[in-house]
Amino acid sequence: MKKKFFTDRRIELILRFWSAGAVYLFIGWGTGLGQGSWIDFIFILGTIMAIFEMLVVNPLIRRMLNVKRTTNYLATTIGKKVLNRLGHIFKTILIMAIVATIYIVINQIAAILFNLSKETVAVTGEPILFGLFYLIVYKLLEAIGQNLKKKTSDVKE
Image: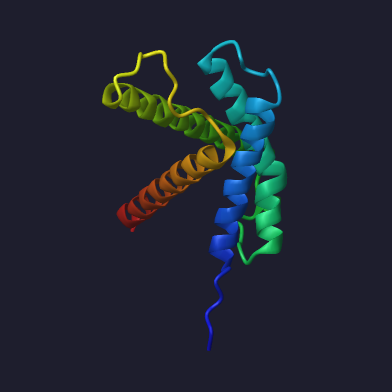
């Protein structure tokens, strides 16, 4: 029997990669939002990405693929829902800050290796590389969170 290449996990990765690149393309290149400073840009891009994930990407993944919710959303209180949403926004802003740091480190290393001035930007932000960095950091934080949950549940037992 032939194995499927496009498993649910791979489709989820492709959707998250594409959505991160698309949001970066439309916000980072298409608008002037957050152009005042890096902090503004990270905050605005992270907030918009979190809202896009909560309203479009996550529901699409849950309905299209065999992915179940970890909690019963209808049985959750409004306060818990608000905290979950705010936590997701905070997590996405953190991911954007880490991705921005990755770009800064890459550019500093390139400046050292190729004797460029410190102001030279060797690797600019573009949707494909940004989507890849976003996906790597997203999955890394997700794995760390699952390990922490597992360790805390092991301690309680």
